[in-house]
Amino acid sequence: MVPCLSDVSLLRSIPLTSLRTIAVVLVLAVLTTLVAAVLLPRTVPATTRASSADRPTRLARPTLRTVLRAVGRYTARTVMVSVPVVLVIVLGGLLINRPMHYVRNVGDVVKALTPRTQVTSRIAPLPQASAYDAVPAAAWKASFHDVGDGSQEATWTGPVSGIKLPVRVVLPAGYRPDDGRTYNVLEGLHGWVGDPQSLVTGIASPQRLQEAIDAGRIPPSILVFPSLNVDGGQPDCVNIAGRPAVGTWTAEEIPRMIQATFPNVTTQRAGWMIMGISAGAYCAARTAYDVPQRFGAVGVMSSYDLPGEGSLAHSGKTLQAQNGLSTMLGKREPDGMRFYVLGAQDDSSGAARAAWLMDDAVRKPDSLTVDTPASGGHSWTLWNNYFPSLLTWWGSDPAVFKAAGVTAPQGDTWAKATAAGVKPLSETPKDQRVVGSVSPVRAMPFEINGLGTIIVAVVASLGALGAVMFWSPRWGRRRDGGKRSVARLGGVILGRVVVILVAAGLVAVTAGIGVNASGGFYTSWRDLRASVRVNERAGK
View 1 (cartoon, rainbow, N blue to C red):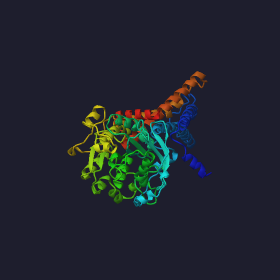
View 2 (view 1 turned 45 degrees about the vertical axis):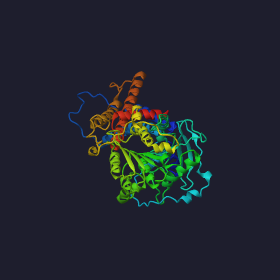
View 3 (view 1 turned 120 degrees about the vertical axis):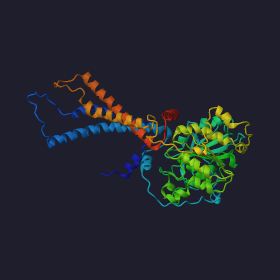
View 4 (view 1 turned 135 degrees about the horizontal axis):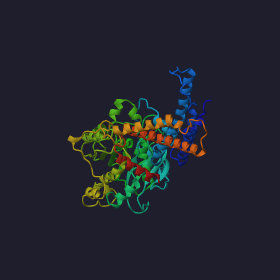
């Protein structure tokens, strides 16, 4: 029977950030573990004690029936053990996904895993000003509500693009539309996979914003994080013919919505910055190139130079090269735009290299600040640690304070910020710009990506699975064929449950280490522990 479309749709809509989903997977993992613990002994053939006189002097050739029975027994064991192992891996993924909202439902996972084929894309220009001016004023306003994590959310429809997606805003303490103050604006773009909440929780933006304002490192400002997930797939950064107009959404509609909804934001270019992380970092710079009159500053955190996601990444090398951040930066008409470009040198996506290429391409009066620490990978730990540095850099220009109608603080901004715990800039000299490697062969043996760590994890996983498959089914068998006591039987079953869960946990950890090593996300145990603490805070 072929499943109907409604069944498939229902499956794809299963939420992956819901506590209910996590609870269901947890219960299924426990139940399947219990079933396996009870049924595994049934896969062991009955044996009788033969006397030495009865034993054959030479091995008999196994019959086909014997071979088939053995295959059946081991197949049954494999299925019984594999189900709880897979469920434990899924449970771990759900727990990691929940605080950061990498994916929202099963459909997002399917789209994320679907390979993209090369297509022929054509960049469409942004609409003319008349298209926005023709929209009624009321259509630009959004209605936000508090979501309890320091941010407010609205699901808003862009009147020109037609895109309907969630938008998060973070307001400073005491904000009122009629408080007589002027507020700057920072528009932030999430990575892929991700959503606006990841920028709220992953970089602790409400706390970081307030700390920077209270310390006088930036003037009163508003953060706005629009979603880029128009269809669950890799987001485009520009308008692509035949695709949702994401460029219109990020470059024009979101800023206009913020101006209409929060009427006391600044209209001066110096008071507007766009930033992003990972794929969102590329989009931030690309958007700023398209609307230079809108943003005076750009924050690029762990971007690739050539487009790595979306239509531009799958339209051939020629279009990729034309839309490289460094290439476009070198060709644009310089107008005083400021760039902060962060990239750890051990980021396997080439973020440090992208920063250095952009630094080589920039022309005055544009300016570019390179921040390329030796380590940090491509991780939330890095972005969380350096978001205060980005805010400090933004506020180091007196024009940013002037745009908000306040006087810039006196003294060395960076010195004060560093003394207060903000990460200083790591401006790598040009003669030292050599990107490090996150290869397991080159990493420290027992670091998270180290060859020693990978070998230990694989050996431990295989050993645990071997114990479950070949040893645990024979636990508790009496050679004399007598019955086992209830207490002994319960203890044996509990022992199998423990070893199955241990094996599943080790396999899940090994899979996580492998995924991390291939992606180069975390390059040290320290960074991973820091990220766990971020996730714990985000999940509260």
